[in-house]
Image (cartoon, rainbow, N blue to C red; front, side):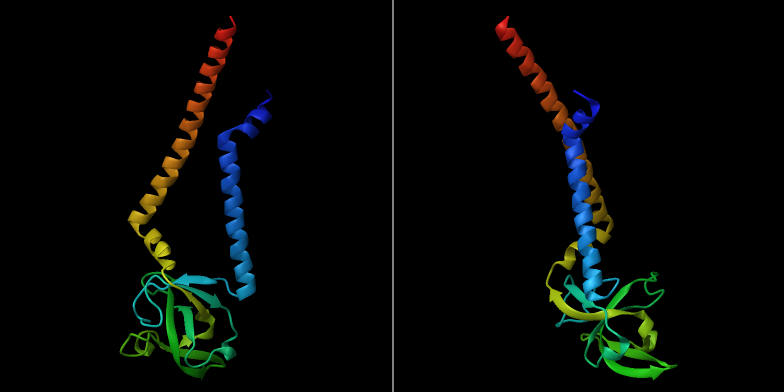
Length: 192
């Protein structure tokens, strides 16, 4: 049997192709959501209790990119504040309580539904350039997975699962080959 046929028929190759196809499908779905929802970040999870009872920790929100002029009082924005929690892309999910014109563009005062006061004292007005989009839908609990995967234990668990999967695939296929060889020898011995 040629090397190409052996590779094609190997379990490891089939697993690699399957994983590659799953990866491409997920990337394709992500790109499609970005195009349809007109935003670079079409999904985000709710990381805190600041928007309760409207949104809860672990909810996944679907975000639509909109023009700043389309943002109204009461809309729930997803935006970032550079340097917040040491990250330049940390996403915040809060409601618009005031819209202002500032230096030829729009700015937004926001507030978490569960917070006693607005975010104006912390961040000032949020410039339109920091707005990712407006929350359109909420999917309960699905965001917990993303929250847990960001924690060290979650990363460790995923790494261990991948390692176990890879080791099992390779040791399992080797055991099957050894078993097939024993069966072939037994088959030949029966005819001798």
